Image (cartoon, rainbow, N blue to C red; front, side, top):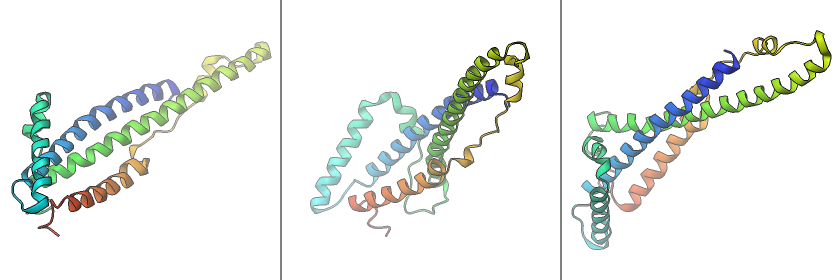
Length: 186
């Protein structure tokens, strides 16, 4: 692919990455708030006060974000009593991983943009040298047709695609465990 095509692909990857990332993040956050809301119903002691506070806060967030109603009514709420790969849990996991696919797309597009910018600057520098050679120097078209870029895949974005989802899932597990939300599960 030429560097001009790579520049267009980089822009499309970045835009598509944000288009995937933002709704997936909103849906995951709303799902987690729904999960916390469901499990903050009744408890005893100091946990009751904390969970009642969480219950009120989730209610307030839901009331003050009517523009997110599509997520409030359609985001899958995980159910700890069912299998990990049952209906709502599986959809939650898929949407959760879409966050990181969007991040990987955006990162891949940003990398391609940096490479295209570097190549464009290198071509400008080379054109100055070619003009100094006079009539035996190469034209801009000749230089541009010699430049090819490899195809970039999002699967090579190791940190945002493979490591970050696991780290965030482990941290979220311990936070929920600390809040006492999953006391019956473990």
